Image (cartoon, rainbow, N blue to C red):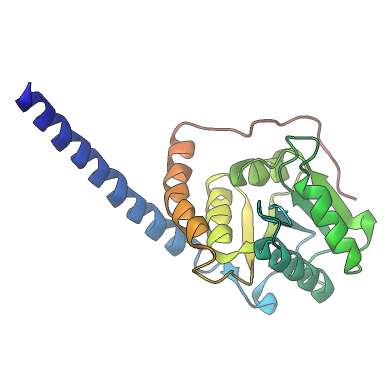
Length: 214
């Protein structure tokens, strides 16, 4: 019995080592593959019809302002006013009646002067994978600019590359590393899941009726 538990611990540690090493590889591969497609400089981006803004809540659970949200909205507004894009898809979670990321983003952009008629809402952007594939399959876009923080854009653009989407990323200002520690740790392992999803052909939770962007 003692030998059994010893072997079990060894196998567990080996498995953990494999997961960690593969996570480092996944992070390296995603950063290398997207290096030329994500930027903080709006002038380095191509002109496209649509920008896809990835959702998050405007406020944290404790009620404080969520700067990931604030900085993404500022970046989206900058992108629109630069003339690089003419329309938006705001993609986020609206899985509960009282929680609506797309509507919150819409209101914030309208408050900054973006016309309501150029904004389209994707209420089923539960994951980055869902947002990217739905932008292609539901909204008919095979080339677009993603708006989020750099670490998120890298993952989103890589998902696009895996799914025949010509995606670019406009990087919003990041949150300081101390405040965003939990997010950065989660992102490190989320990149591993990108490869797992691709291997198993994972699709969005919902697809549905196509929406024309005019």
